[in-house]
Image (cartoon, rainbow, N blue to C red; front, top):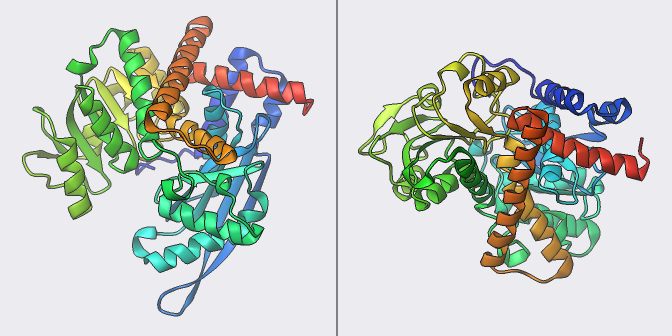
Length: 417
């Protein structure tokens, strides 16, 4: 979260839900069910550190709703993780799987730790310890984790292996974002960004904006940020600014995405990239660019800076980067927001493809994955756009309406309420 931000992320998720429920006149009983997680597990994970001491880490797994299918959602390792952040992300995962119309529910996991200060051995023991504690509620038919902030395919591999020990046999479909060699899917590495690209491409069509002439900035230069910088650059757009947790760089003539990624790998940050001016994270968010790609953490756009935003499109690769007050300002100003749980749904969509391939034990090539992802994201974008026109609301509320309608129908048909 940005400094100075005080809004509880789960309260934000509930407020967004409440607004959408009012717009679509959602059944009060279903509304009440969807305001709270179905279940959550809090765990303590003892880990033997390299110096011989034992540390106990707090962890969570929230299963928000499984009316449409098994819960699905990533696992974060973060020093500032909170249960309310995990609840909010689990709620957004519920809407995300529904808005792209895949038969899954929503969940999320987290561990309070600082992986940057841990050795590979300590991370492995923590990862296995997490599965030892939460594995009892996981499974391809129950809840399917994936990578998220500061977790990666190697961590997923350790977790999948630990689950195999609990079950007595390998169950590749229990977790997604695995290395390809042990059941991962082609196209998973850049799926979040590639899905976002498809929605940005469709937004440009809607706004009659030539993507090949467009400028863009990326806030947050982790996995999603690096990939969206690469993919949009390949599509002809011009990258002019990038920031990460240690600083930012600006060059109006354009930045080389591949060179930036190499610099980040060498130095740990994009700051001090040669041939570029320094820029703060706050300055980057209000730059005069066509497309702004927030790809970091929550609450980056607030009532304090939304009026200064000049981008035509805000493509939310991050989860929850825009507060409700900022949303209202954007809508009034005509800033077109591609809401998080639509924009960044490419990751969970390819994760779904990974589970399907695991269950079939038959794997697709990269072209097939891209083709299917393109269709899912494009269909979802225009379904949301139609809802926005029908209900005369901003894209986020429209995405909620589409998602809530699908989840509510599943609840109604199953007789849960």
